[in-house]
Every structure is written in structure tokens, then in C-alpha cells.
Length: 275
Image (tube, rainbow, N blue to C red; front, side):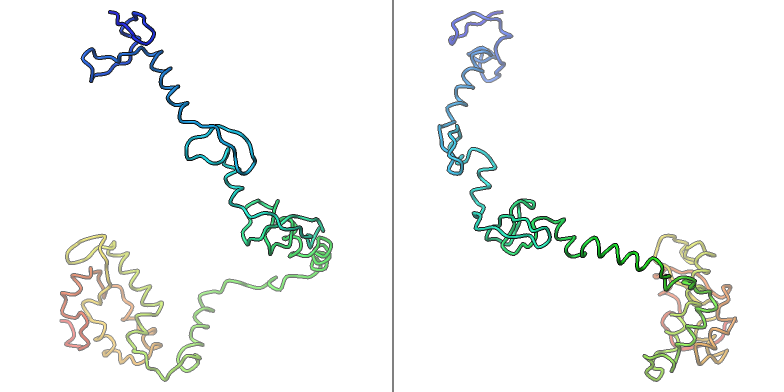
């Protein structure tokens, strides 16, 4: 099947025309070669003869294009070079602009720049290479102050240091205003007891049997307040030496919702001992 092209005045195959569903024939009126020629002529009409205000070069640009390249456009916004400075390290002269920002990567500096490059500034601040060599040779024969010193402490030494800073021995002591329960619950013994309870119960609530929720350790069947009164615990040292307080058989893992439903939650009354 053929079709007549009014532009080139030739009968061509229907495959040489671009499809167009909006026309009754289903293709464009002009062939592909004529369509491309018309589009290129239409595109060239959008360019005009212009002169770049930065470099004075003649070029063809569009209606809103003022510069021949990106380089000329960026140079038009830059401030001009106002003078030359001498590098404090190598003595080389370099140009600078009246600006505080440097965008030329070391070729043109700012008004407060003192060095021609980053290499010179680093060497100037770190002193000369000769002085650095003399310092390294002087420190070669000296032994390190940490040589032979144990940086890690044993558990006994850590406990001894902790006890030496408890109570009135501590510089922040204010006469024992902290509650005894807060001191016990914040000690390392309580944290270890709570971790052992969680690992034994596999981090699962013992009432609703949910896993993955926020959990807490509950003293059960003997309450925490009952153990303090029974063993007559008045200080933190007495609580540490009480073996019954750290027995993991007297504890269970509960989620926060189940823990709030218990009778002993946030209850400061000691109550009766369990049966």
C-alpha cells in the first residue's frame, strides 16, 4: 500500500510514514524523511547569533542564553583579582580575590588566605620536616609511661575500688539521702540477678507467656520489701551479703502489663510472708 507525500511529491510505501491515530488514514501527511527535515529546521530557528559578555566569543544560543559556556557564566559572578600575596611557607606568590570563600582549589586564594596550597599550610602548622625528625629521634630512646602498667583490673580490684568510694568516702556524699531500695536496684548484683532471671525464663512472661514485650524482674513468692525486713537490711553492704536476696528461685519474669496487675506492684507495705 502506498501514499503520496505533498512535501517531496513522491508516492512511498505506508511504512515510510509515522503512525498517527488521530488522522483518518492512520499516518502523518508527510513521510519520515520530510518530517525529520522540518523538525530540524524548526529547531534551528530557536538559535540566534550572540556575543559572550565574558570572553567576547561569537556563538549561537537560545533566547535566554547569555553566555557561551558554563565556565564563562561562573566567571561572570566571581570577583576580580585584586592583588598577589606571598606564601608564608614556600615564598611563592599567588593571586587572591576580595572574598572569604575559595572556589578555585588553590589557584586563586581569598583575602585572608596566607598559603598558596594546603600542603604548605599543613607543613607550616606541623613545623618543618627537620624539627619533626629531631623530635622523633629525641623520643626514640625514651620508654612509654604506660609500659608495664596493667590497664585492666580484676573483679576483686574493681570491687575494692567501688567500696572505697561508697558512703561518706565519696566526694558527692550528702548524708545518705538516697533510698536504700534505689541503691540496691542500681547495684551490679541486682543487674546480674535480673539477667539470670531473664535467661532462665527465656525472656518470656510467666503469666501471659508472651515473648518480645518489655519485661521486668519480680521478686516472687517472697517480695523485695519482705526480704529487707526479714533480714533486717539497713545498708547496701548488708544487702550484698544477704544470699536469700539474690536467690534466682525467688524471682520470675513478667511483662509490664502483667506486672502492674500484681498485688505487690509499687506497694511499699511489707505485708504478710508467703505461705
